Image 1 (spheres, rainbow, N blue to C red):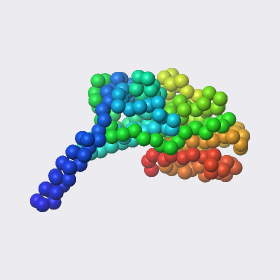
Image 2: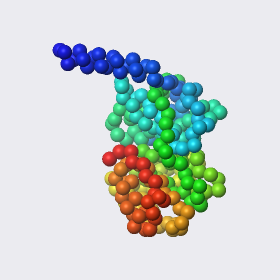
Image 3: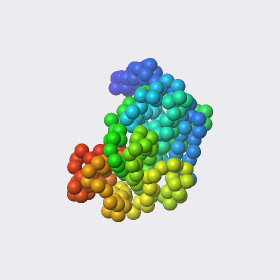
Length: 237
């Protein structure tokens, strides 16, 4: 009984702290890519200053009671304080369930926005590699890349319909490629080996599941790229 009371008091205290920290935004539109395991969410965040986003940002969204998930906004407009989230809803977790239920006009609660500390190098070539969970992050990299820098790369997407929709909906030089293995690193390795890159002035950004990130980094190191040219961000195992 005492343990239950302590848990209840702790939850109440955390709820009070949370209520002071939370900010609120509004859902402007929800687009579900059929099948609906990729969800595109347009948000208006009036309490967020986007003109300071010089590195890839993330938003810590409340997705359930005292439960938060980090999502990368892409395609933001500082003047209208709007942005888009891409949620990989292929996993039956709290974030996926939250995204599946969102509708136009809903209120979104979030604690803060922060930086992932990733920004494209001022160089001749930026190559981005990722999976479904990193679509927002890679598109944010595209938005931050200077016009004088060559931006390209590939994102491994398991569903053929989603690959078609990626090409149809998004103005991006990123190539959607088929997933031929669980984590996608074999598929991206095959794609990489068909490309030709200069060892100088080329930087790789690998974002997505940890297994893919680790294996692709090993491949690029074997090809002669140094560790400073390979920027990694792992999301899940």
